[in-house]
Length: 414
View 1 (cartoon, helix red, strand yellow):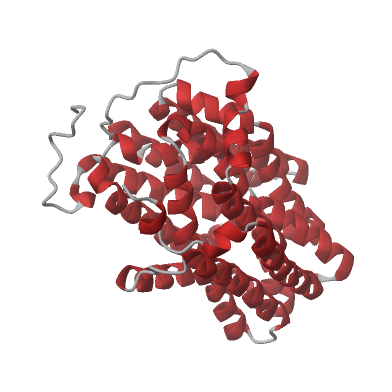
View 2 (cartoon, rainbow, N blue to C red; view 1 turned 90 degrees about the vertical axis):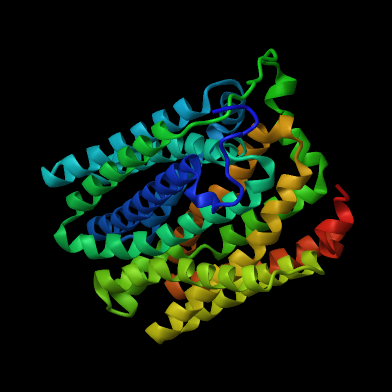
């Protein structure tokens, strides 16, 4: 592949360009596998323990590796072959779920073993998710990057819809079968990554010092237009992340079993896809900061509705609103962070972004498990929604420039 992307045909859909198509398939396979293992782990843990706190520990085991590896991941991504990083990470993910499949099938599985495997998954995902963010600019020219990112995002959302539902259905075949399917999907994703042609990238070879190690964190800390949206999403999801408690709602509150659990897991992604379709047709062009805050506030309000609902259809709708309101925030937050970040900092800032955005779901699950253990399941969800609304109010005062942010065109003239 040439440095100037001479083989790229701008007259065709970007998804017909082989490197993008292979990455699309890879993201679908990985996302489905990740969602399916989350369904299986959550169901198995609650089946073994009947403990909301143990469900919270699952989120904690996914969160800890992201924190521990934060200063390592960015440097690795900026200094070494990114394709090899992804392939190694996916191999470890396949190994982790393979171990769960074998031990569950033989009756040797234990809760500590499950949590250890989840820790392995969290460590591998820290490298994989950060590296994946850096791949699109190396496979398409800059003019096609927005279209490529949109297509790849649709792949992730579609997989997020299919994965939980498929995981719930496959639970009927047995938990070991779900884990084995996940392992195959992780390896299939690696196959597609290996087929991708990528533009050669000049990797960083600057000496590793404390300054370079902490450069990503320092950049985020000093730039309120990056720190604001990252931290807003992180704390909102921490307080509003009730997905860890869905097994309790499915089994003990609504009595809908595995199929209902799969539907509830998929509902937020359905809402996200529907909102993304609307935003493609009618994009938000003005008052972007205010719209982003409104999206996060809707996230908190719909979490409260979900917690108080006694109707399964209403709860599914509330979960759809949760996903849709999060998408409303994402379409503003992610481009803003990308445009504020210089190319030389992309790997390290992406690592920080992965910590703020990616692991906020896991620590949110832990928070939900702990509060459910202390106060009960429904109060825990309601408290989380109220906490999200409080975060919105605090962040409006803490980051006034972000609240007043109007348009991308007015801030970025080029």
